[in-house]
Length: 214
Image 1 (spheres, rainbow, N blue to C red):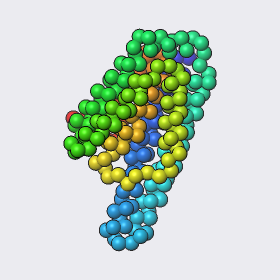
Image 2: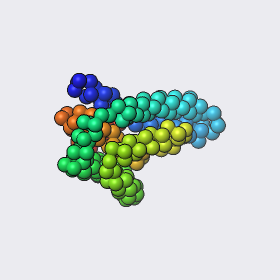
Image 3: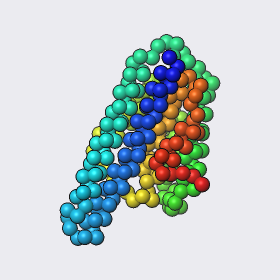
Image 4: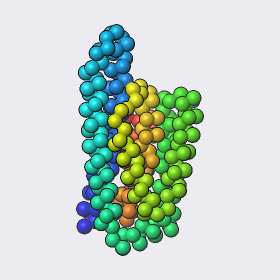
């Protein structure tokens, strides 16, 4: 039974990481399409990459919808024992530990990234907003509402921004960090904290998205 729980948690994590990678691919393709229009001075010069961007966005939303289904299923089937363990999770400050490690990991990756100091200032302010929201979570219902609201918000956004590669770190952190952190919390609850390494989970997100700290 424990193996099944771990497998479900890994599947949920995979959905979020895959969606984040597709979001970055979408933005890169959209950026190339806009540059092609400028360089070749034709309105349809970037048509191929616009199509690729649309496909990336569709695949991203499929991953997000799968993640939503897994989260809804978990919360709809949670029993009283799991609920009690979840409450104990908060009482023992394990949730706050996750927030602290997540924030520290994010800051280190920004520090060693190629983001300019001007963008870093704005990013730091946005990170503070994200983690303030996460710090206000104090119940099972808060976790559920936050994760579903974020997923719905992402899915409803049909268009992306043509951000260049250098801004992909900002894209990843600002759009996905809060959701990813909450998903890690859910994973820890599913397996009761026996296997979930918070730092390794975040390191995997950055690495698979091509954002490895020095």
